Length: 542
Image 1 (cartoon, rainbow, N blue to C red):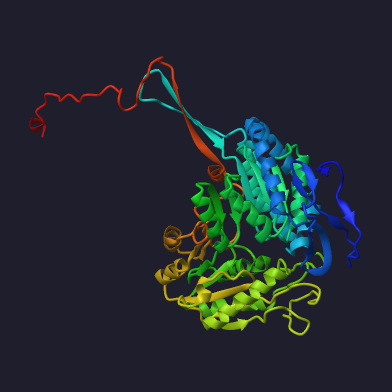
Image 2 (image 1 turned 180 degrees about the vertical axis):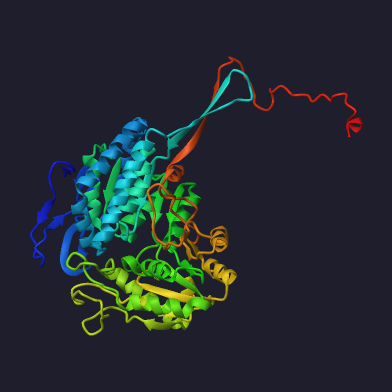
C-alpha cells in the first residue's frame, strides 16, 4: 500500500512493439494505491495496435468497492465543511495541472482508445474548461434571503451536498465526461467513488493522480477499476445497501433504466445520460456544402462512437440527389488510420474489440430491416479496405464507414442506436414530414437542421423533442458552460455541465429563523387585509 503521491508510475517488464512502457495500475482508495483484494487483474490495450499493452489494473471486488465507499463516507463531513471557495481553488489547481500535462494526456488518450490526436486534445481541453468554470462557481454557490409574510422573521435557502456519489462513465469520452460529473459534485461538497471505464483505466488512473496532486484531500475521490458487470454493478448495488446517495451514469439506455429502477426504489437521486439516434435534417434552402460537411462529421467523427453521433440523416426529396452526390464523394475518400502515425485521419479504430463486435451485430439490424447498403463492408481487412485507409488492418480494429439508404420509420434500424461509423438515410416530403421523422425515434438527445429559412429554423427548434439542437451545425459539440443531456430514451431530464448541473449534486435547505421570541405560524397568524369598497358611481364615469 503506497500513498498516491509517494511515487511515480510503476513500470512493468514488457515487450511492447512500440517500445512504450507498460504501467502497473492501482485503485486509489482513501489516497492509497491499492491492488484488488483477491489480486485479480486485467489489461488495457491499444485498439490501433492490439499488441501494445498499456498496463495492468485491479479487477476490483465487492470488498474493494465497499472500502472505497467507506473512505468516501468518512471524508464527507470534513470536505462538506470546507469553504466552497477553497474547494473551488483546488478544482482550479486541477485545471492548471491538466494544462501543464495536456500534451502527454492527449497522447495517452489516443493510445488507449484510438481517438485522433485532435479529438483527444479537444476533450482534455473540455476537462480543463470544466475545472476553470467551476473554480469560480465555488464563490457563487448562492442561496437566497426570502422575505417572510410575518414580522421579525428571516427566511433563507442554502445548497447542501448530497453525500457519497457513485460515478460511472463510458470510455468514448474518458476525460471530459468524468470531469463533467465529479468536478461539480466535489464543488458542492460531495465525495465520490469513480468506477473507471474498462477500456480506459490508465487515463483514469493518471487523471485521478492529478486530482490528488492539486491538493484534493484523501477519500474525496476514490478510483476503482474493473468491469461494468463487476465493480460497476457492485457500486450500483450499494444503493440498495444504503451506502450511496447519488449515482451519475453515462452509457446505454438499457443499463440506465436498470440504474434508475434501483435508485427509484431507494429514493436516491440519479443522473442518466444515455443513448441517442440523433436526427439531422437538410432542407432545400440549406448551403449544401456546409450541410454535407456537418453531416459527414456528425456521422463519422470518432468513428461514430459518440452518443451525439448522427443516426438518421433526413434529406428533403427535392435536394436528395444533389446532396448524396456530394456526401458520398466525401465518404468514399475518408482517411482512416492511427493518428499517432498518420496525419489528417478523420477517425481511427473502434474503442476496443468489444465495441467492434457490438457494432458488427448492429449492422445486422440494418440488413434484416431491409435497408439498402450503398457503401461499407464491415471490418477493414487486408483484403477489404477503403481507398482512404492508411494503417495496417491486422494491427488494429478498424471499420469501414457505412451508409444505408431507403430507410423508413417502420424499420428497426430507424429506431435503434448504431454505435459506430454507420448512418441511416431517410427521405422527407416537406418540412412537416421532416420534423415528424426527427421526432419519431425513441431517443431525444441531440438534433440538427440545415436551413437558411428562418421560419423553418424556428419551427424546428420549438418542435423538436431533444435536449440539444444545432442550427446549421452538426449534432455534436458541447461547451463547459452549456447544459448537456436529453429527453425520452436519452436520459431522465438531468443535465451535465454549466450552472444547471449544480441541481444534480445538491439539495435546497430552507431555514426559518424566528426573531420575535414567540411562536408565529405562517398562513394562520398573518393579519388579514380587508378590501374596502370606495363610494364611486362608476356608471357616471362612463
